[in-house]
Image 1: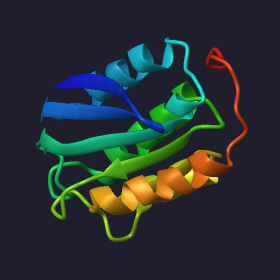
Image 2: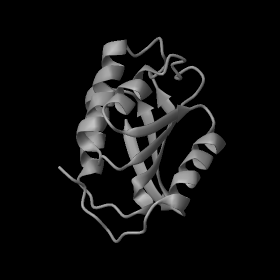
Image 3: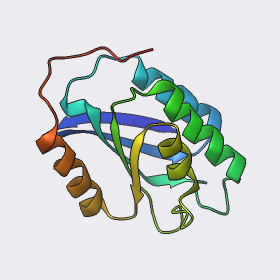
Length: 137
């Protein structure tokens, strides 16, 4: 699994590609969490549509829980995270989204890139401006 990041206007675009593995996903999240972030990067669009072996039939519920918990443990509490999945990856019960939301991460999981961007844009327009800030530990 590989992860690339690109600062775009109003948000940080993160794209995960390759074969999903829980350990690799945790490590990618850890590395990403160690870099300073700006106001723009507090809005994140995580695109996992190119991940293989990440369908609802491929990833046990406990792995989805552990991945969601890794996001909560490693990401700043004031992040706004939109995750775009394919219809085969999308859990209609929104288990991962619920786990993260219950632990304080503002998150939306969707199959629509446009919906994810609109959701992020609404928050970015209203968020207070700030200089670069280190991620809290």
